[in-house]
Length: 174
Image (cartoon, rainbow, N blue to C red; front, side, top):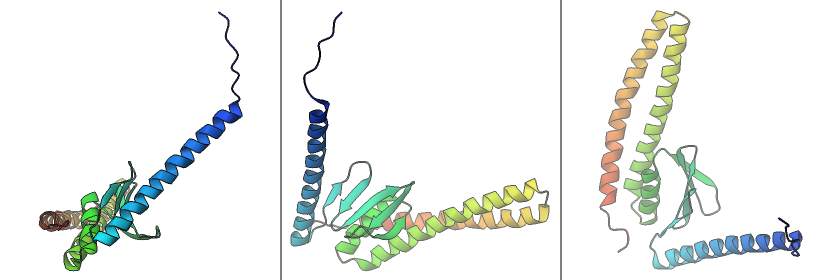
C-alpha cells in the first residue's frame, strides 16, 4: 500500500501547537486574575481548582508537594506547609474572613500533627537501628519515646478534627 506524502510543513504544526498552548495558558491566568479581582471586590474568598496541583483560594494558593500541602501568598512565596488539605483550605478561608483565632488554632494543630508524624518516623528508624546494633537499652528508650509520640499524635489529630468540624459550619459566603 502506497502512502500519500503530507504537504503540511512540520514547522507550521509546531507553531500552531505553540500558539494553542500559549493561548490556553493566557486564558487560565486571565480567568484566575478575574476570580481574584471578584474575590477582593466582593470580600468573598472564591475557591478555584488548579487541576491536580491544588487550589487558588482568594489571594492564596494551596498546592500539593510530596503529600503535604504548601500555602503560597499572592506573590507565590511559601507561607506555611500543612499536613492535611482541609487544614490548608480552612486556614485560608478563615484568615480571609477575619476569623484569625480559629485559623491560628488550625495552623498550630496541623503543625503539631506534622511534627509528631516526623518524630514517629525518626523514632521508628532509631528503634530499628538499635535492634540491628543489638542495643536493647537504647531500643527500649526509643520505643518509649515512640509510644509517647503516638499518643500525642492521636490527641493532636482529635483536636485538629474538632477544629476542622467547627470551621466547617461557618458561613463563609454571607
